[in-house]
Amino acid sequence: GITLTPQGEQVLKKVKKLLNIKSDIHSLAKSDHSNVINFKIGCHPIVGRYFLAPFLKDLHQAYSNITTHLFHSHSREIQTSIQSGKIDIGVVVNPIHNPDLIIKKICNDKICIWCPKSSSFKKDQFVADLGLSQVQSLLRSWKEAPSRHISSSDFQVIGELVEAGLGYGILPERFVLQEKLKIKNVFPTHFFKDELSLVYRPEFGKNEVEQFLIKSLKANLKGKN
Image 1 (cartoon, rainbow, N blue to C red):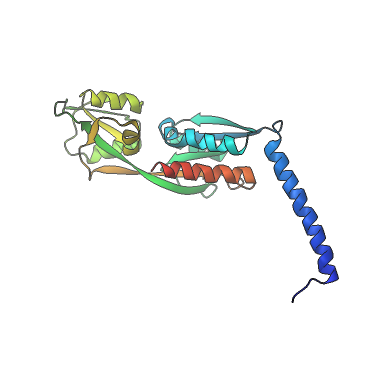
Image 2: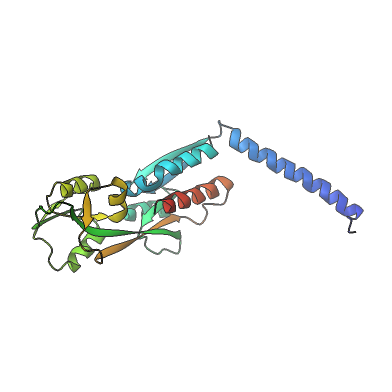
């Protein structure tokens, strides 16, 4: 039994006009191919293999006028570039707390010690990226770590060398499972836990496209975990 007052009827008409205008603008933004939107996204190249293909597919299906620039480096450099404005958003491993950035944890990974599934391999040697702090932390706590090592920053190379029996390998569990490497975890209880987080500046994520980008990044990164 409740009805609008004459003044309410006038307000309703104006609100409907505003909603129609908003809908028209939304449709125009999604269909206008000349209005290209550029985004700069950063992550470690290995982390990018976890989510980039499905994420970019979702993004380009939703918005055909998106141009994406990918930047790959170690996580500490990605976070620095986000803070300085060189990159819009990134997936950072073990980000450093910073009050000037939005940091949202998405999922975990584990850095583990691996060996080939065959029993014959060089037990006096390991293969790893010695430039990673996670690797250095594992080595410090590995009481019987081999005295010899092969250093490589390429995880694919490390995996292949371990499969070939050239020693133990230190690699992320997620990478090993994704690549279906024929290696096994030597010490299941001995690992370094990584946190994968979305990092961006507070002014990012204020419009519809940026909100979609954040939501899609979260979904595709978490979906592989």
